Image (tube, rainbow, N blue to C red; front, side, top):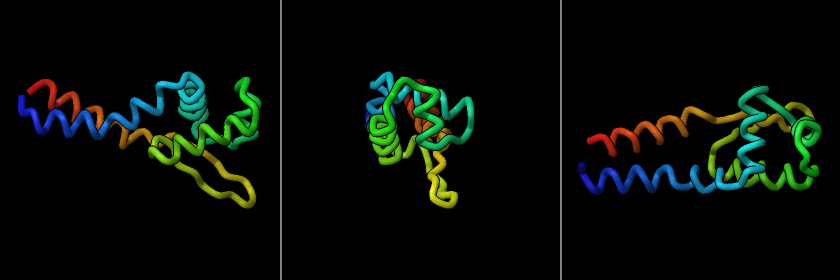
Length: 98
């Protein structure tokens, strides 16, 4: 196992692990993965979170790149950004298996 490669893989995936330590963000991500794309209002309706809480969590999730946003008129539609997460996890798995 190459230590530098393994540590780099851990460092790359740590922001993703950190963002999902919160169960509310896990819930929001699950909703987005099931539905594909949702607005803040839709997420507020399907969770027990307030609109400000949903907006706060989405902002944090956007900064780590686990979700993406698309502007449609005055609404923002949020969707999961799974591919980069999967790539980071694959890199970590490969580094650990070496």
